[in-house]
Amino acid sequence: EDKVVQSPLSLVVHEGDTVTLNCSYEVTNFRSLLWYKQEKKAPTFLFMLTSSGIEKKSGRLSSILDKKELFSILNITATQTGDSAIYLCAVEREYQAGNNRKLIWGLGTSLAVNP
Amino acid sequence: KAGVTQTPRYLIKTRGQQVTLSCSPISGHRSVSWYQQTPGQGLQFLFEYFSETQRNKGNFPGRFSGRQFSNSRSEMNVSTLELGDSALYLCASSWRGGSYGYTFGSGTRLTVV
Image (cartoon, rainbow over all chains, first blue to last red; front, side, top):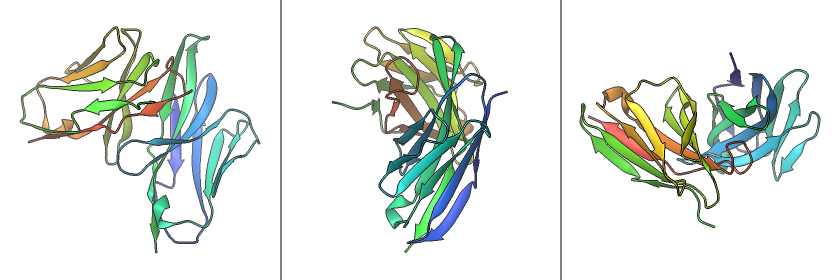
């Protein structure tokens, strides 16, 4: 059965700290891995990763994928209170070649950044 | 361009009633997926509609149903509401169901009393 596991489930840090969020997966017919940030309601897109070892970067956030060990990490450096949110990881799998795709979601990591 | 629009934003219903939620996808997106989100349970996939057909389905009872119209707008219906149905219901649209352009709406907060 397909599964996506995120760790830790929750995390409390102080402003300025660096955090690493983990996402491991066991998914058949992997196509891509996505990270989303959910602050209040709508999750917003952060990164899509398809190739191993290539770091995606956006400001203080970065992410990398390891397709051999089946995991991804999301790093946030110099955290700010505005980074407080739930970070969601999803893996896209394909059911029939080019026809049907589905996202498998982890439970998320709840990050709280204290001033 | 306009994002994914969900209505209503908030809803309070009584046990036993039924409810219909609406989702208007981004223009050009043909796939609409529905999720239930509760604390500790994460995003639970309900179903996905693509070109008016249900293409994928999660593990929810038959009280949860949906449909998609020719303009790609989708509705989700929950009949015989239970207290445990209280949750944030999110929809997401994409061009053809994959990860490219996968965009969420702001959700409908349903409270069952």
